[in-house]
Image 1: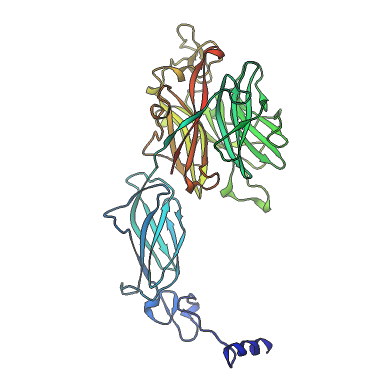
Image 2 (image 1 turned 90 degrees about the vertical axis):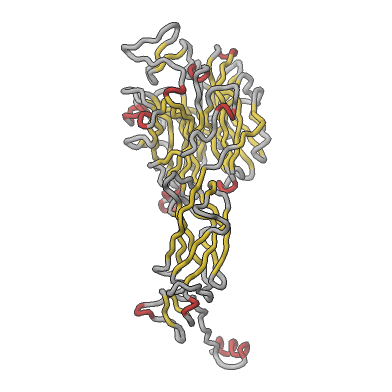
Length: 493
């Protein structure tokens, strides 16, 4: 009674009984609607022209199928249509947008007077003849689909600067960064070497451009081994590091906060006895949270690991995927997610995956058999000259610990490949592969090693993509071994 009295004072008499605007409600059972409205195409309206029974979707200024790059903004015009196909000029609702391939940004638009021209973007490359189709939906059954849209992977622009030695404690070589945004700044883990040892260090930056390296490495290699591919992730209050020693396992090391030294742990994250396709070696891991899987009971989401692998049976190369609920013990999938012997690739190294909306995007180092200068070897096929057989990869290498010897030879070309996936299991290679060529990125070198892929602004892939990489170079100070050296980057929209 008090509520009615207060409203009455405002309304100058009577208890206010609002009339809902047209389209505010969907029809109920038996097409029920508020008093004075009727059901049309699932919507409660005063007049038929206020109901959207379908949509006309067009692309202003474009003849034929639009051709756009991932995240490139382009106009789309939506016109609500009545049941007879005429413009529903009274429709004023918020329409959901979706794509048959990847995501739409924004995912909804609001029409006024039955129409709107909006600017949208799509985030996954199509592979002709396949196209992406835009869907506009409102009420149940009110869904319309556009003609096809062709989406390309945007080209990379190589930055003119490169991080070289000396870089903090690294005085002989520095390479293979793993970069992430931490708080308001950035953190980079990298491999490096000085006269005393080889290991993995850390550098920090307020802006992702200017870096300050710590004075000492966080973990050093034992003997003459080379540590590769640091991937750091947080489990509880501690930081865990997955890395590679070009051996039979992917080791794990732990730090209290990621800035203090990492201590190697006895149990590795992954071993070659866990999958047939990785029986010859597992290397170059990347660990990331499986954000699309969700977090059970408000806890941490499960973990994903992507890694390079080699088969002892046939020498084939592949990229594998493994999962973990605790971040300590990973179970690989029974089959690789990318396999070289199915597509003629002799090198599939260092997968780096970024989740862009609901799309997984992977960049990796790749070469066909004809792009590698090497001798194939095995128990019955010995190497010639002073080379020895690396039985993990069935290729001949120099008699040092130079596992990547062929990557520095003139006949080698290792570029950067790109693939996308909706679930992280089934991947579509880019039509434009390689998306970054070594001759464009580093003209005096022969092989690129993908090291990190991050959103340009540190958080949103729609801001652009920054790809970090290192080139393989022979180091006189390291027994003339072929090792990754230098930290360079390229960007794309």
